[in-house]
Length: 239
Image (cartoon, rainbow, N blue to C red):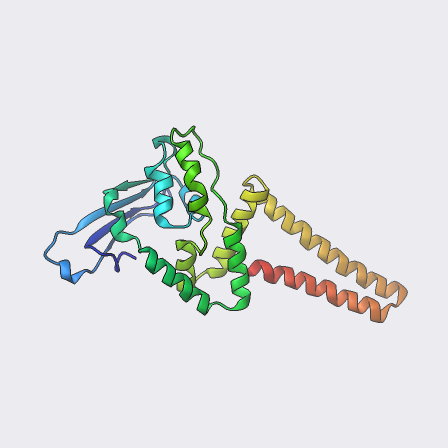
């Protein structure tokens, strides 16, 4: 993203405390070599920025909601020379092209899981402190977190391909927790264990029934169905 920016930029990124060192990225705009390089600083104040970031449709929305349009007490990221941000972010035309390109390269199985993730996308958790611009925040929330296409982060992961399954599992789990379990991801893990336990119990019960009543055909079919259900559940989660 930095290399393809429309201006000579130096982006200095500081990770959240305890989560990495500061690093810098430079653009390569040869036609502006005579112009001085400008610096855009991105400082992640709180680790919660990362889990909140994936809720938004685009990078610009995330920075607007987490820095520009929120009270200082609720900011999870800070920007130096924020007016340079539009030079870094892709245009809407490029975003649309990325969406269509991703659609062509995904298989039907991956497409189903990606669309499930998109449908589950929801607003991030509420802010810790009362927000004086809460009405504006609520007005923008539906547009920011429920895009017609995939989010900027989704498209980045699709193009990159690395850790795609890990991203889908983690983000889908986060969205399910936020929608149905008050944001508590351990509850989602608990429900997963219960479902796997039930499926395993059904398969084990079928085995015992086969041994006791010699129901070779019917019991065998039920055992196969139970075993397939366990593997299908695991496949659905693996993405």
